[in-house]
Picture 1 (cartoon, rainbow over the protein chains, first blue to last red):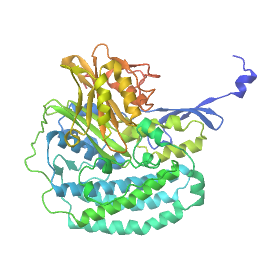
Picture 2 (cartoon, rainbow over the protein chains, first blue to last red):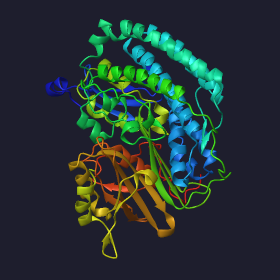
Picture 3 (cartoon, rainbow over the protein chains, first blue to last red):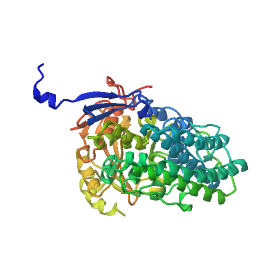
Picture 4 (tube, helix red, strand yellow):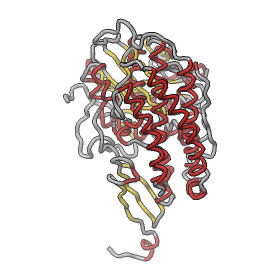
Length: 372
Length: 151
């Protein structure tokens, strides 16, 4: 094939990002069509970690699927569990004791803070700043210790049960959580001074990676991504589940639509999560943590229902279809990362490669959650 | 309520059972959705357009294999970001010729959801720009969520 002058001018080449690449935080491959340093097209190739959780949900009983929920979005595993037990409880008509709902809120919000802390650290590593990761891990470690003391696990939690939680929290947990909140609050000005106000960081991410509210709507992007685009959509407010309606908290929204906005949303959300936890600890009711008379093998009546929770990454939804037997007839897991990832192709077009990696980082993707 | 004015629009395109269109208001507290609409497979594009005009966000697309009825059901979930209301649009196709039009030109986010549904159920979304395996291996010729696929 002869190379004429025209094709030299329009020369593009294909660059393979991943499946093993530090910036993809998991086994994600992106086929990039590049014009020099600029991205002409970015085609994500996913599915390397696909385990067909939805089929597993169909060929085992409802309770036996519980451990699977901790292995999708393992950075914020409690939310997956919450979505699943919430859907089954809604279908089976189970009423959860109030204390159990409070414990769910406290542990979920702790998980949200730990997820956001990990994200801040990993995002800054993507941008070339290594040190903050160590501080984030230092703070996150305390949450993992607290959650380990009640759930028995540090990452792949399986703590929620149909009708409650498996373990009650004790005074040590309550005191430890209060101590942690005080300690994280005292650290937030440090993050603010060294990261949020850092001129190198700001010049890097401000005005970068624009995602409009309309794009979010067309792709179904939720969580900090849509809230960084000026839309105050939060499942905790839009369809208050559990006992979230009892607490005062704000939904942080930034309208700049850039990577900085998504960063600021997550930083502000950590503060709101701490507010929720404090209120929940102050008003924690006494009582049982499991509903009475939950059958050993659940057999919800025929029908289907949908249940959503606000995970650390967006709206996690579960649709359960029951045929009256002890296994689900169909279990759909709607992962927030799947929808958030799908807009990358459109939004990265024309960007510089290093900038697109910043955009990818700002979406806060957990690849096994996309692959399921 | 954003869903009330939509009912009239859906009544025109929905499947009718004994002259009553399958446009059902459901209780959010027990079902998780506010409006449950069943349309003929050929009219999902019109249904998606109604959702788009009402500024709904696409939530997910999935399937259910009703093997005993020899049918596959496709469920489209939509959410409104202001009111938190949810609409589920359902359509059924025969199990041996599962074809219906794509809505990915209205909602680009449907592209991946339709590819996933094609992976899992073998449903063909006609007009889809690249209906190739998304989560399954690129040479996969099986559809694991069909009830006759034994894992």
